[in-house]
Amino acid sequence: MQKDTHVLYDGKVTLVYDDDAHSYVIDGVPYPSVTSVLSVMDKPQLQHWRVSQVVKWIEMQWQPGQAYDADHIASILSRSIYAADRKASAAREIGSRVHLAAEAFFTAGERFDVSRERIETKNAVESLYAWIEDVKPESEHVERKICSLEHRYAGTADLIGRINDRLTVVDFKTSSRIFDDYYVQLAAYAVAYQEETGEKPDQIAVVRLPKDDSPYEFETRETWDEEWEVFRSCLKIKKWREK
Picture 1 (cartoon, rainbow, N blue to C red):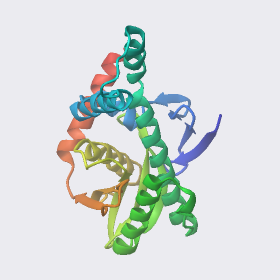
Picture 2 (cartoon, one colour):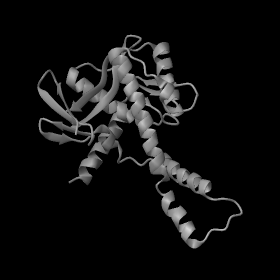
Picture 3 (cartoon, helix red, strand yellow):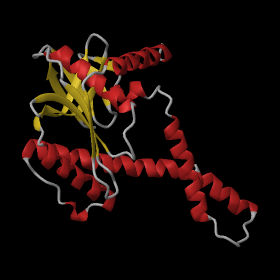
Picture 4 (tube, rainbow, N blue to C red):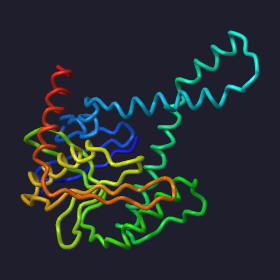
């Protein structure tokens, strides 16, 4: 079990992060992660994706013109429910590799050898390097642990740095498109970072790194008041459920 200790708020706060459990403990008190808070949100696009994965998997098992007995049909259907889980697990692995590539570049200037990576990972990492070359971000923090003592939550920001001399909180995604809830996540990071440091970010940004060979997407927002209110509502719901 890997646990990392981080000292925040000018040495006044100690955060312990458990990577296996994806949990945060601040001065001995467990804090919910930003992503766990956002899990209370209804995500119809995710449900549609899960159903589509089940349908695709069943189609792959079904051979036109072939007769199947009841036991075989039952076996196909029972195994199909795990199709989305397998796909999601593979997607998480790709996302983890991309984040490792970003961390290696911004902390040590190292580039991944993508020749041995699966094609989806290779495409996403190459999109990351293309974004870096085009935008030229100046990194100040990578995989930065943050927490809000006032609102009692914690998380990890992928990248905090300067883009065109503007303090920016960046999140890397390998999804099929940019979803609005990504900005809710970033708003939570921005608010917590400002609370700790006293410095308000100038903007928040999503960098979508496609798993196919399409170009990256880069979007920024300079205000996040509405997204912050959405996050606060999610936080209230989560705390209410856990009473």
